[in-house]
Image 1 (cartoon, rainbow, N blue to C red):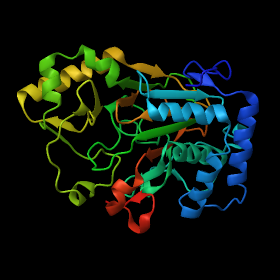
Image 2 (image 1 turned 45 degrees about the horizontal axis):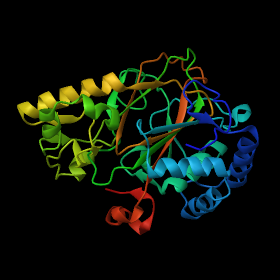
Image 3 (image 1 turned 120 degrees about the vertical axis):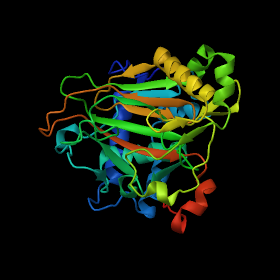
Length: 334
C-alpha cells in the first residue's frame, strides 16, 4: 500500500482510492489501448502493448501493486477504489453462460495492465473458452450453480488448485454492483487463519491426504484430460507462512484426520473472513497462494443492470507453465 493514501476510499470495501487526476490518466491509457474498437484482448501483440502501457500508469498505483506483489499483507487482498469503468457507455450486463470479453474496452484494458504489473496474464482453455478477461455475472437458470454464473453462496476456494499451474493472483474489477448492494466477495487469508488451527490440524493439512478435482466452471472433460489427480496437501511451503490449495466444494479429505483438519480450517476461515461489498471502479487483487475467496448470495433481476465483475488471472512466472501453453501464448491448453 502506498505510504501516502492517494484519496479517501470511495467505497466501504476499498483499502484506498486513487486520486481523480490519476483516475483520468488511467482512463486515457485504457482508451488508447481500446481505441481501435476491433482489438482482440487475447492477441499477443495487444497484450504486449498493455504490458508496455503498465509502465505509464500513475506512480502511486504501480507502487501499491508492486508492494502487494512483494508481500500481500495479513489479508492477502488489496482493494483499490476509483478506477474508471466507462459507466456512461457500459452496455447491459451479460446474461449468457460462458460470457467473456474478447474486444478491448476500458475495464478490460485496466485489468490486463494490472495483470502485467503483477506478472503475466493467464487463462485456461477449459474455463470460459480460454479468454483472458472473463465476465462474472448471474445467468438465468444458473442460480444454484456453484460457480461464477450462480447467485447462491459460493464456498471458499483458491482458484484452480487442482491444476499443476494455478494462478498466483486473481484480479477482479467491479463494473456494476447488484441492485440491493448485498452481494459480498468473501476473503480469508492463511496468515490470520493459521493461528486458530491446532498443531495436529496443521500437521494434517501439510500431509498429502487430499484430492482436489476441477470445479464445475471447467469443461466436463477436464478431469479426463488431467487423469493423474494425485493426493496433495492443502498447505505447503513455509510452516509459518504456507501456501494454500483448496476448494471446499471439490477438495476431498482421504483420512479421518484430514477430514477433521479440513473442517477446522473452514471454521478458521469463517472466523477471520472479510466481506467486500464492491462498488463500480473497485479493483480487487487476491493473492491466490495465501487467500481463499467466495461470495454471499444475492438476488439478480436479469434486467441488464445486474452485478457485473470482470476477472483475469496473473502468474509471476509464465515460463514454469511453458509445456502447457502452445506457441508460448497465455492460454493453458491442458
